Amino acid sequence: MPKPTADSAALGLGVDRTSPVPLYHQLAQQLEAAVEQGRLAPGSLLGNELELAARLGLSRPTVRQAIQSLVDKGLMVRRRGVGTQVVHSRIKRPLELSSLYDDLETAGRKPATRVLRNTVEPATPVVAAALGVEEGSDVHLVERVRYAHDEPMAVLRNHLPPDLLDLSTERLESTGLYRMMRGSGITLHSARQTVGARAATAEEGGLLAEPAGAPLLTMERTTFDDGGRAVEFGSHVYRAARYAFEFQLLVRP
Amino acid sequence: MPKPTADSAALGLGVDRTSPVPLYHQLAQQLEAAVEQGRLAPGSLLGNELELAARLGLSRPTVRQAIQSLVDKGLMVRRRGVGTQVVHSRIKRPLELSSLYDDLETAGRKPATRVLRNTVEPATPVVAAALGVEEGSDVHLVERVRYAHDEPMAVLRNHLPPDLLDLSTERLESTGLYRMMRGSGITLHSARQTVGARAATAEEGGLLAEPAGAPLLTMERTTFDDGGRAVEFGSHVYRAARYAFEFQLLVRP
DNA sequence: CCCTTCGATTTGTCAGGACATATAGTTGAC
DNA sequence: GTCAACTATATGTCCTGACAAATCGAAGGG
Image (tube, rainbow over all chains, first blue to last red; front, side, top):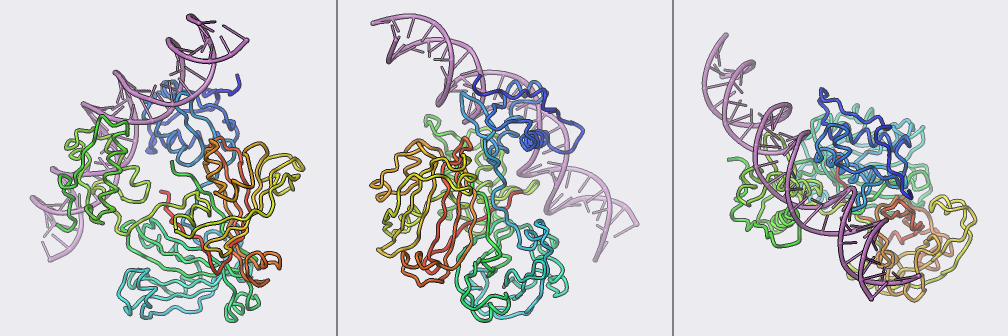
């Protein structure tokens, strides 16, 4: 037996039909937890779908939907005629649309924010094109310095369409912009990003405690809600010595 | 009628049951083409699934599978009780697992490669951890300079497990590493990337026609095949003045 | 006139079945 | 003994049918 088949009975699988959580999602979560905790060994076969469905009292489409969601996450691989097996390496999530604030907070870095500017200005050509508004029309401009453990990490410059949010300086200093958007009922959907690098200007160096000419990581991002409207255009610079983007890619078949 | 419903009949939709291409995939391609060509206006409703299925002679699950694939691509949004509508902004693909060679070639930049080193060396701790091999065991090391239009763009340093590929210097200079892997039957699956920035060393400056201390964009990437094995670990530096990463993010619901 | 309630519409979830097709191991012929 | 053909097995695709839940607009009551 070169590739062991997982003993499904020993995995503690079982669905709760009184729960409002969809059955396929319950199963997917249990399988993911089993992989996470090592009860489902990497490389092991999952056992065929029909048998798994019969054991759990589910239909095959439901079991397939659960497995498919894990395949989409990159956790498992299906091969026709062979079966479904757990991927060997620990695969984390694909790149999420996260904010620097949340990133730092989950890393336990105690983020803080100082607002440099919070005004309304006429849109420059670049900003107007990114947000899809008229050139010269009013847009919000927010400029902030983000700190972690009392050390400056990044200068964040955001442009937003007018009348989208209540952008009080007080709230900006106590939370992240994305959290404010989500709290206002805006459903973020996608973003277009450009990541590059350049040397710091004297002004940026002063804000970030770096000498002029120090390498900075730059990120431009236009974020869209689920209606396809641009809700934010950001031009950010990060201290390269203290910050890097890390993410997971999946091949689309 | 605030939100026009697309006239499916005028979209030229129809499947070919003699084709080996799955029906749901045929439908998805036709819908995507219709969006791309503007025949399906952004924001317009797609029409309910049952009717669409009846018109095409398909079952609802098949139609749902087609639409779901487009939702996963970020091309459409479904809302229960409302319908499925085309996203307003033009959304391109999420970040793909592409190589610099392919990126440059599709951009018409005429890539060229100079191989600096192509040897076998003992694995350093970092490389051993990334590739999942024993520390000190033999690994391939390939170091290249990538040019576009006869200008240096990047220094690429790749480590590969032994006996994976025929790494002749000749082939390395005429094509990309990823293309060689795919040609050898390796199915790339996922990658973990870190993007940062730093100042150029004197040696790197000489290779890239930049002064020492110039800002460079750095990328470290470990690539995995569909069995979860690490097949490549790359440490690359790009001239920040000439190159940036651009990609699309999708929110995972 | 405003608010609540109801109902029509649409997607979300789930069942059970059928046949197609790729894979790998086994059997058979040479 | 080696190679080809066959067969068992698993996933891939597709069908029909059913009910649940969210949404939005219209009808009704205050």
